[in-house]
Length: 86
Image (cartoon, rainbow, N blue to C red; front, side):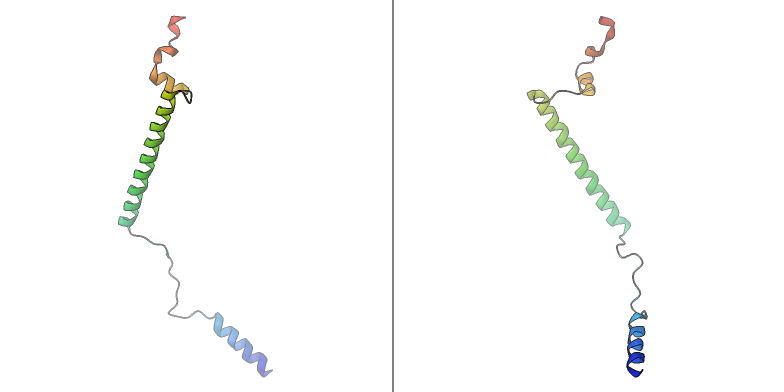
């Protein structure tokens, strides 16, 4: 019996929370300034990527590698969609 009670006492001690080891409720908390800086950087990267894709698409269309979609065709030559000519 003595060994069993000693073992259960050790287990009970290991499961008790220590007063100085309270977990941080927000382990990944950031400041508002950090968030704003991250958001500006992310928006700038997205904008640069979108501009690069638009430039590449325009080059591919000019080279004849891909066809224009309806919106691009309308922006390029709206007279194609003018039904009064027929």
